[in-house]
Length: 139
Image 1 (cartoon, rainbow, N blue to C red):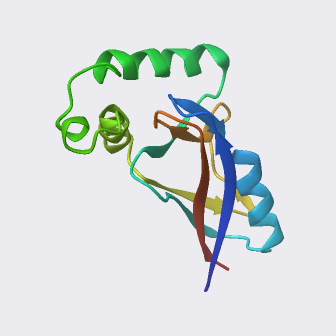
Image 2 (image 1 turned 45 degrees about the vertical axis):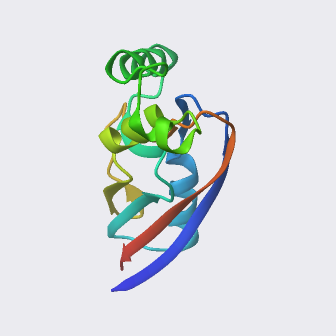
């Protein structure tokens, strides 16, 4: 059993900016020559999250609109009153989505469904450079 830590760096626009990480994670898996195991995808930071979705423009828009209905950007947040940074909504949205995801792989390939991609969502109220931690466990 090997444990290999790696990372991805991406730039985002914030405000529900969704990025498909699937290809980049598959490339890292191939570079490490692992065949069977799991990969943990972890977001550093408290204003972003990861999940799976069918990454297509309609669902990307549906997801963004859902987040706006659930946790409005222009709502009232105690975090904003305390820190004055205006991103209380992004912290709440990120907590709903969660910072990590575990995906199994078999025969050197992620075991995702046909229409399932791994996505990163940046909820912050500004552009950011982000680091996503990948930890592969396998053989």
